[in-house]
Length: 328
Image 1 (cartoon, rainbow, N blue to C red):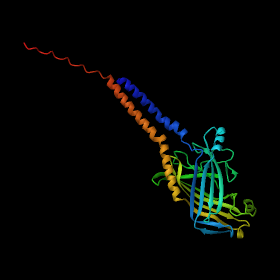
Image 2 (cartoon, one colour):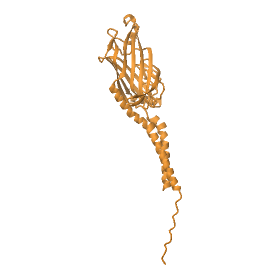
Image 3 (tube, rainbow, N blue to C red):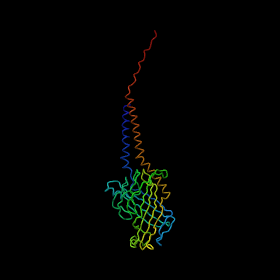
Image 4 (cartoon, rainbow, N blue to C red):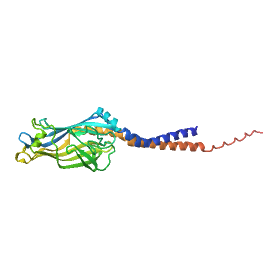
């Protein structure tokens, strides 16, 4: 019986020991992915801010500017692209909507972002665009890969339609989570005017004909939870200017929008709570279960060897009973 039990325990030990690396290196890369139908929204604010008054074409101080960012997964488009790409694909329709203190639209820039559901690498397919302009992304956008590394990444900037390094600046603690802090600086760059202008009758083509151009610079900051690769906080020191042409008095330049943009506090709280729960799921596949199964396999192996050793130990011979003495 002991030998049978030791063989059964040995079989379970081999099973759990083999299952440990399979979970980490085979199952995790295939199971950890962004769902195609995901929907997210985020509200950011710049308090205070500088905003252009298109009536006077002068910059003015305002109490706040609100930026609403939405990401909506297009499942039908994902399925269509997957059939030709041969891998899991996510299609996000993104919208960055900027509103002034009165709630009226300042700018509105839509995007279509197509990427690999597992690695977050861009997938180039028909429909990839920013504000209606076709783009060919390199690097990441919005989200870092699972198990983010302590290194620089290439990050896509939607305003310039180009990619640039975003630098790892160290490990920090944010709301009880260990996070990696990243920074990206975009110097003053000439960028296209939004297709949708806030004033009726003014179009990008009309502004360009008057010789006025739009320029943009920013310092982008992210606090990224490294297990999930999800940012739990983001800030941006954002600046936009209109320069030259007949639209501006004297042909100089005027600030179109400037401010330190921060995530609203309630959205920070909800993001941290969501990322914390997702972090546990990722750790189950990358740490908790693999190490647990490895430890269980080692324990079962030790118990199996112990039973096998006891089964092979020679039995102790019984001492013969001395004959009883009969009285004479």
